[in-house]
Length: 133
Image (cartoon, rainbow, N blue to C red; front, side, top):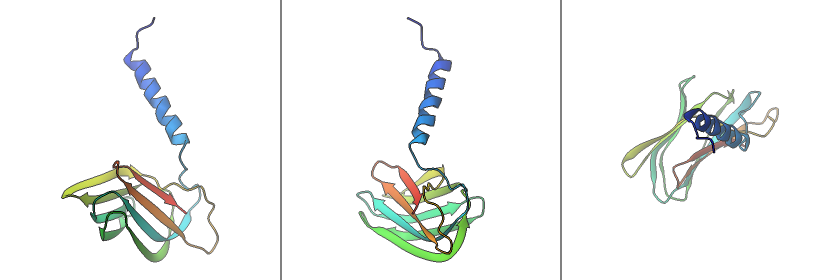
């Protein structure tokens, strides 16, 4: 039996990340016009100061309070989303949380003349999902 080396462990870890990424949607390959955002609070506590920020452009949109099991819906003048990473931040039970940089997933082709909506789910396990629909 051969010993497991750090290099093999790293290779297996990288492979599992690639496989996991293959199971999710992909960032849009062409710009998508977005004109709305829905934050879903799938946790058991209220969330405060929930924000989606695009570091590359400095753009952001936020909701002050989202009760447990509820959502915050907002619209805005439509903008093109070009697949730039976003950061989702929020406060829960007095602590600040951040998704780190993530990309909004989309499997839908842009519909000419129609703005899409971004759906962000903040989940009980601390995970964050963002998709365009």
